[in-house]
Amino acid sequence: EDKVVQSPLSLVVHEGDTVTLNCSYEVTNFRSLLWYKQEKKAPTFLFMLTSSGIEKKSGRLSSILDKKELFSILNITATQTGDSAIYLCAVMKGSARQLTFGSGTQLTVLP
Amino acid sequence: SAVISQKPSRDICQRGTSLTIQCQVDSQVTMMFWYRQQPGQSLTLIATANQGSEATYESGFVIDKFPISRPNLTFSTLTVSNMSPEDSSIYLCSVTGQAQETQYFGPGTRLLVL
Image (cartoon, rainbow over all chains, first blue to last red; front, side, top):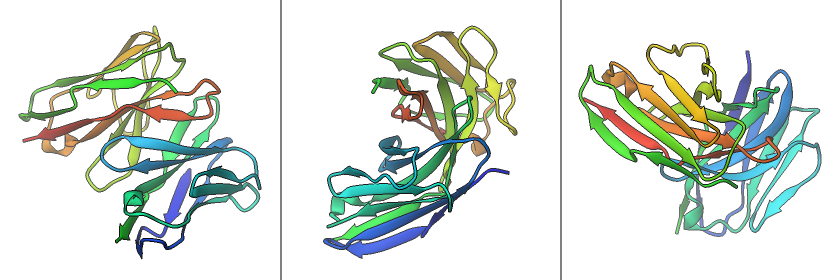
């Protein structure tokens, strides 16, 4: 059975801290790994990763994939209160393009 | 990325009734999906909405409970039938990006069943 496991489940930090969110997966017919930020209802797309070892960056956020060890990390540097959200990891598989989601990491950034 | 809208944004319904949620995309997309997010849970795929044919449902979801239509490449509906309080969730549609390696989500419909 396909599995996507995120850790930690929740994290509380102070502004300016750096955080690392983890995502491990076991899926058949892997296509890509995606990270999303969810603040209210709709998940907002952050990164799509398909190749090992290539870091994707967007401002203070970055992510990398290790296809040998089957995990990905999402780093956020110099955190701000606006980074408070649930961060979701999802794996897309096969030609059907279905997503299997992890349980998410609830990040709270205190002022 | 495509601009996706959903209607209604939220609704409160009585048990035993049905609600149809609409998903509209501003451009033609190959693949559309419907997800459910129950309170405190992550997203679960309900079905793939296939244009011109019956939707493909995931294990645990059936057509009688969640009928789906997709009449063209920009529009789909999900109906939640004979609702019970357990159906209270956020319902989200998503579409694949041009390269089909990503998915983008609509704003979601928050449903409360009393």
